[in-house]
Image (cartoon, rainbow, N blue to C red; front, top):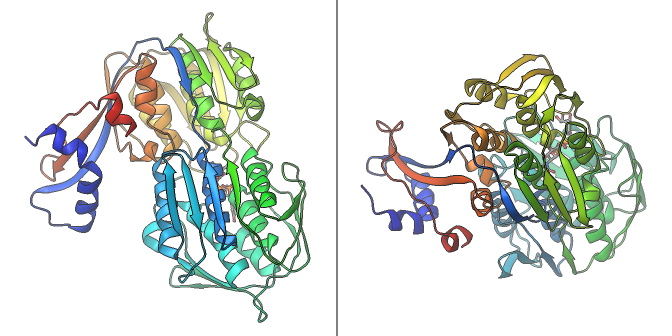
Length: 475
Ligand code: UD1
């Protein structure tokens, strides 16, 4: 048995060591798991962190200027650590005077590439492409990985760069892009064949330094797009229309430093609303932006969740009369988000009647369904539709998180399941939720993180179990 305190304090170090040393004595890995004892109603207050999906492009935007970009309300999640490492590898300096503030200065960029090792763990690394190409006239980014939810191409990003006059080639798994011979992109009129969030962000960033005017049509309208545009405009860019289908950008010669606060995470907010409703508790959710969740709130109200806006940044959630089945279909903002589909599915397992959940944004985004079925849920998948019959009692089980939002749904299921649920591979949830177990514990959930180094032979056994204190969890 390895000392618990040593493990907890050195978990990150051990993970790095294990990644680098395939032959490390007998340990084959260190894997965090969640153990949840279900059945407790959640009561109290939780605060929402900054939006990961806004912080990632805003961090990439810092590559557009040699001056310092200061970002506040950055969530403390793994994708942010990956993005920070990417910026530092490229040559930027990133200071964190406070845990959730990043001061990024990309004055001495020497490397114009995002390597496979980083990009494979996080698809949003591709956001380095637009800023690098626009400012330095060249960029090389490995083709992205990230969540295992369909093929997720980046063809629309690349077609856009070509319209800006760049030469784009695929070489040995990398995208290699070069600006025209004068080193500067040319503004263009671009129509996205499909709404793409990071595609819109990438081209919007590139257009800020392009020569002339750019129009992005059928652009994504997510609040994260508006947040990025706000930052870019603070840096001296001329972006109009963000939040609508048509964004117009007048290119400028250069951009400067700026200070900006990242918007609250609307998906974390939605996940906590679901947690309160499922456990029939009462949660006050602070520091959120209900106006970014209009479709989620109206859908959840239609199934029986009572959501009151205490003030413009606080919601109070209860579910006194149970849930009823209502169909939903995911679609780009402002419609119901694909990032809430898995959590909604758990709600529907507890709802009276049959509901159909149609996933229109991503293929292959129902991987959580089979894990929920193992817990007793009645779900049939027919193509892009999940048919859920409820209510069913969920039973604790050993389940595996397959992607970020799927993991959130398994945590929700664990909160209401009979007995104990053990969720494996919670590194997926750590990519996007800040200390979800600490936040849930603070409102009464019985959830703990288990840090377990395992040998190949012992991979099904846990020989070390650690429950961090509140201070340790928030460190
Ligand atoms: C972003 C979010 C992710 C969310 C998704 C949809 C970030 C960091 N991630 O991902 O959490 O689930 O939006 O709201 O913001 N597509 C193409 N070609 C392209 C680009 C996209 O065919 O070049 C397709 C995708 O395969 C998918 C759809 O368009 O079917 C939407 O994808 P997109 O909006 O690009 O998702 P991301 O920006 O990767």
